[in-house]
Image (cartoon, rainbow, N blue to C red; front, side, top):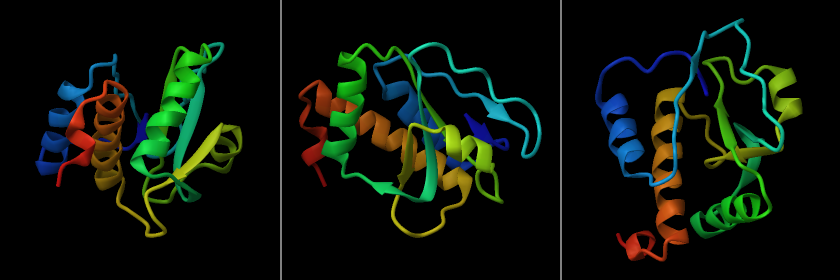
Length: 135
């Protein structure tokens, strides 16, 4: 889930390219920049909010976190990317994990592309594909 629309452009193309490569079911939900209701989390779902104050995980650790949730019976992991003003405090508070891609603040379009690349990398790692070791 992301606040704001990605529209068309290089960032959208990059997100689409990685989304097509991910072997797990993926759905992108775009929420308005402000307001609107975040879809309810169904039983057992995990909410990960991207936030510059969150924990930084390497690709292997991120993949292992996803594996642990999956193998522990968590059927769904949702990722939330805030709008230009960041996350709503209530969304941050209800997240199971705050995840950062470094200490820099990233535009939500770039954060979305980086998230999809890391999701693809994680699924590759968990499938024992050597991709994560390349360049």
